Image (tube, rainbow, N blue to C red; front, side, top):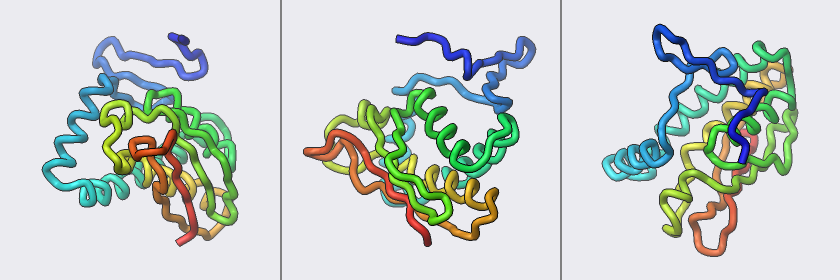
Length: 176
């Protein structure tokens, strides 16, 4: 097990206690705490409504993150999308593996292994990783726009490891 990633340093401000990675403020909470809160909101609103809210918020956040990271690291294009998947994987959400990616066409296929949500929910025979869905479209749209492409996308989870017979999740990004 790796305990330190020198390429993703965490700085803690001694005066404020704010954690920062890659020039962005971060929060550090136990997985069970986050997912239990997620499950409580899902129970109150219903999974479909909550997924809709998270899609919009996740899209906006991913777009912003990719924009800031591209500036911070001097990267562009596919490298930004790859960097995003790497950082998500390093932060405990699960392993995000790009199976297909065509920025100009606005298409991608991302496999998710070891989902934090599946670990907490277990086998519930439904898709539980919907929080991530908007992230892929937001990242794709930011990268595409930065390259001058006019494509706008949507993302959908088509498979989840919490469903019977599935070992991993699949997300598909397609043009609107």
